[in-house]
Length: 219
Image (cartoon, rainbow, N blue to C red; front, side, top):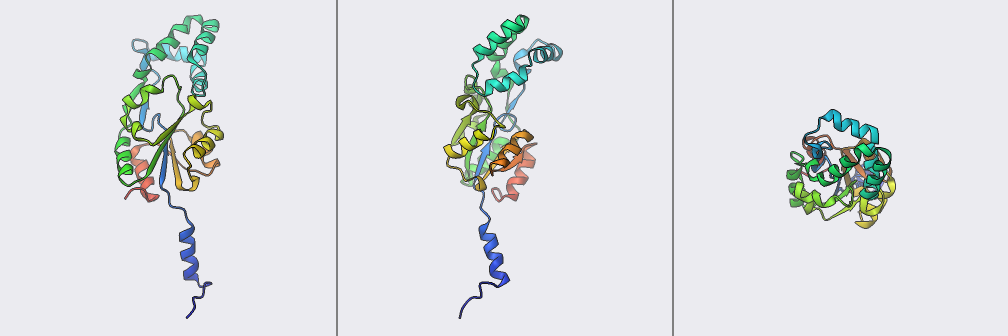
């Protein structure tokens, strides 16, 4: 007796088997596993005073350049030259950086523990200054259980540049079709999708849990 391989039932089975099973999660860190508040290092100053510093020096844009590998000493010199009245605030941000980290994002550590229990591979890809990354694990210990982390400041690339995603895929031998990337930035999510990763826009641990259930990573 032979099987008619053109039968619809057989075709349906083939379609199901062709869909890759997601077995890896690639985490962004800031505001996904650990909270980040840029006002934290400036205790004693009003938000208006800090906003003036940010606006006049374009600090939050320049901070992205720090994430991409520029040393803080170079930014300090730039601000000292152009806005000398604000140079001490660069020092204050760097020296007080730990205060910008507000602890684990509610519910995220529990999801990491559940994923670990299922044998899911867990990695990180973060925009973070290499000089300040040592503050990450003390602020959110779940970061320390990830198998590996690509830190933008260490590799000289930063999201949403697709090249940092390609580097991460190569470094950890990831199969993009089997990997879900989680990030709170829509731009980074789109960049991840452009290189073939599943990508989830993180809004809350509860919403992420629902998506991981849908993908079959959590029950």
